[in-house]
Image 1 (tube, one colour):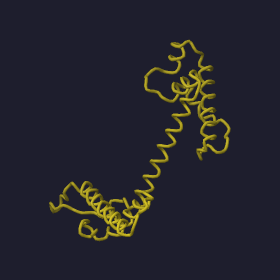
Image 2 (cartoon, helix red, strand yellow):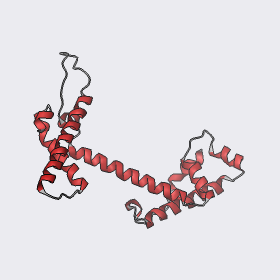
Image 3 (cartoon, helix red, strand yellow):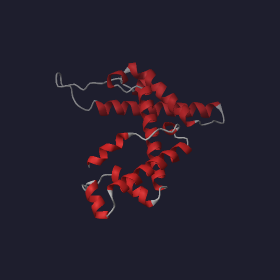
Image 4 (cartoon, one colour):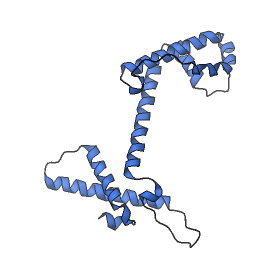
Length: 181
């Protein structure tokens, strides 16, 4: 079935592995063997079609030497199922971490949250010194609030078991670069 859909016969095993990975990730249970067979068959067909479309999108340009359309397999496009899985997991981990940091930021007292946002969410062109003058807050106070906020965010993440924040670390001097702003 995969060979009928995928134009590159060397990609058949990769497509099957990706299909089985999709099925295993769903953790679906089946009432009988026929239901499992139908589900697996549909998953293999859908994965084959997805693979075919992915290769077609990547090959939508013509080979200028002979004017013919080229086809590529997983190896040529550098996107084997394992790489795709790793990329997907990394994106999911990053998304989870960003969401956890956002929750931690929302849990801060307003002045500390504002200080962290001023230092790290630099949408405006306003420099830190100009912001301090405009808000009538000394730079050292703003920086102190920001550092306290960062410490509280780290503690929040550590308490929730975020792996990167499992062990307390000493505050680094990397934040000195913000003084120049």
